[in-house]
Image 1: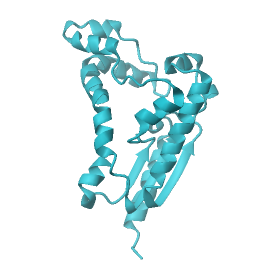
Image 2: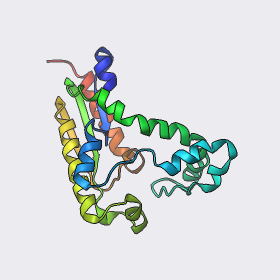
Image 3: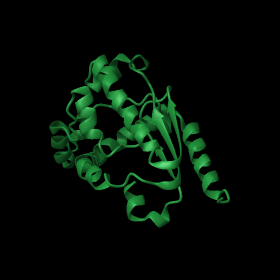
Length: 195
């Protein structure tokens, strides 16, 4: 939305794949009661030690069950060298959301919103533990997320919204078919003769 706000003539349509909402930090914290720390102290310390090679040994191996084992291993290789950049991005999110907040109107541009819909019971016990929330907190968090996703779908007068009950936040990995379908839908609308 930020790009569309600054360069509206360059954007003919939009697909949001479980997209971030400008109000998400405050609203998710309020809903779940869990404070969002985009750059935990331990990861900032590890990023500062990257030159030593220690992060490669100290960082947990990422659990990515939605990826083939070979791809997950490649992600693990790049985890340590990209930690600093990832933390910089996470730390900048509040400012990015503040800058993007005014841009919530796509007019008649075609918009497709894809939202994750996995429920508490669909995650493994290890994944639930990493979430740092109780089942009740998780469910309040997910209701707030769903509300924001519905709001995003209302940012265009020509939109569709699909919730995927078999996908977590990484929709592009777990349901690439849905992403391709959403892109195809928006491109077809853009190419259709205007009435």
